[in-house]
Length: 490
Image (cartoon, rainbow, N blue to C red; front, side, top):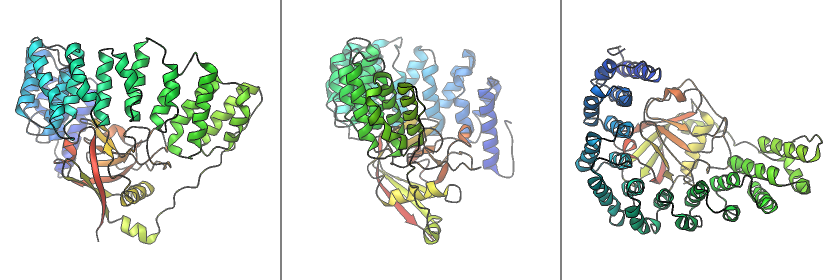
C-alpha cells in the first residue's frame, strides 16, 4: 500500500490514499503507516496521514505533528492545524498555534488556529493577548477578512468571558451577517440573554436562527412569543427552527394558528425546496392544533409535494379517525435541453469570479448528470449565483455554496432528481448538495479531497479544471462569488 505504483501515478496516489483512509476508519492504522505516508510524494496521501495524528501514541504524535504542520502543501498543514483541536492543551500545542499565527496570514490556517485556542493554555495571559489582538482586527480589516477575528471572539468567550463581552459591540454592529452570527455564538457562551433577544430581531434570518437556538438552550425565560414572531419570515431554515422549538409550547392555540398561517403562506409560493420548513410547521399544527382547522388543511391533500400531502392526510386521519387519501398535484418538471443547447452544454465552463480574487473554472459534465449540469449553467447565465457565498467550509472535506440565504435550507425553488453515476467524488469534482434523495436545489459543493464515502449518494455535475490549489483551497466560510460567467468553447 505504502509504495503502490502504476503506470498512472495519479491513480497510484489515489490507491495509496484510499488504502490509508480505510486503515484509519478501521482503526488499524499504525505509526509506521503514518510515518511513511507523511513522506509520500502525493499531498493528498500526506493529508490523510495528517488526519490520523490524533490516533497516534503521544511518543510519536509530537514529531508527526511537527512534520505535518511544516509540510509544503497547504492542504496538509491545514489538516494538521485542524487536528490540534484533538491534541491535549499543553505548552507545545499552544506554541504550535502561536507560531502558526505568527508565521502566516493564510486565512484557513489563521481561522483554524484561533478556533483551536478556545481552551485554556498553560500561559493563559499570553493566550488571551493573542486572541485579543486577533479580535481587534475586526475594526481595521476589509470586508473579506472577518473570519479570523470572529473565531477569535468565540474562543475568547470560552476562556475570558469578560474580555469577550467588552469586545462584542463591534461585532454586533458589523454589516456582515456572518460576523453577527458569530457574535450571537459568543453571547451564548457568556450567557448574555439580553443580547440574544436583541439578535433574535436581526435583519438577517441566519442570525435570528442562531439567537433563538441559543436562547432555547439557556433554559431561562420562555421564548414562545419570540418564536411565534419568527413565523412571519420567509427563510426556510428560520421557519423550520422556530417551528421545532415551539414543541410543547404553552401558547398552544396561538402557536397552532401561527404555524398554520406560516404554512399556508409559504405553501402559496409552490417552492419544492421549502419542504423541510413546511413539514416542521405541519408537525406543530398536528401537535397544537385540532379538528377546527380541518377545512384549512384539506386543500393540501392535493399539495404539489407528495410528502406534504401525505403528512396532511395523516394529520386529518388522527383528528377525525377517518381515512384520508392524499392526491398530490405534481408540478411540471424543468425542460430538458434541446439538441443545440446540449451541444453548447458539452463545451460549457462556468467561471466563478471570487471577491477575494481569482477564478474557479468548472467544466460542466452533462454526460454524467444532464439535468443538473443544465440547470447549473442556466442559473449561472441568469446571474443566480452573483453575490452568493460559500457559506460552509469544512477543511479537508468540502466547500458548499450557492444558497440565497447562505444556509442549508435556502435554494432554488424546484428540486432536481439525483443523477448518480459511477464517477467517483475525487478532489475537484463539483457535486449537488441535497437533504435526502431527489432534493437538489442548486446548492453546490466542491470536494477538497477524495471523498469516496460520498460515491453513489450525491450527484456530480462538474469538475474544477482551473483554480483548485490557488483559489478553492483558500476559500473559507462566507467568501463571496462576485459573478458567475459562462464560457462556451468549441
